[in-house]
Length: 193
Image (cartoon, rainbow, N blue to C red; front, side):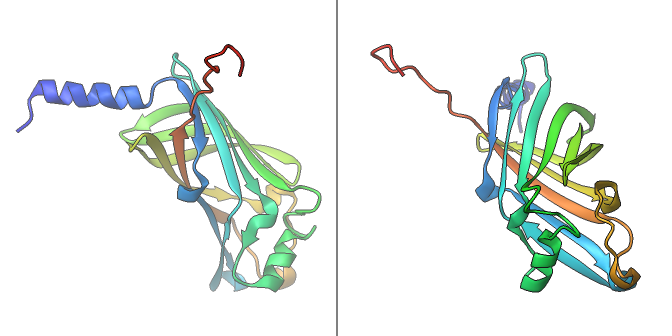
């Protein structure tokens, strides 16, 4: 049985782990996947982006800023022909727009364990405001894990190709973002870095 002292010690430990500072994405523990219904809604195209990076900063005032960057050419659906087509100008235009970025401008708690992350998504050089509902935010092992599913209307970013009317609706993007505290750069003992 734990006492109220144990609970307050645990609360303080959690606060210490999420205190102000700089955080970097751990790409080995993070993922960005997508699913889009095709064939008039009868089948789904699923894929991942394997090239992801990110960083964030939390202020002493509770403010949060950050960026998630996705390498557009790292898209994989387990079908080379489809991957080339999705990287082409008809969809992601990876040659002209090598990254997809989500810039976080504000984060607020919305319910126990949940967060509303407000930011701007840029795809193909087009930007749209986007609020991401984080279903689960977990603080453990010196890091923070955020899990979210977000629906994206690809036509808002100029991706309107629709052979035979087979692609309809929105794509669901699933994000697992694991951030670890950035190691501060310490000055060299001799006074130079």
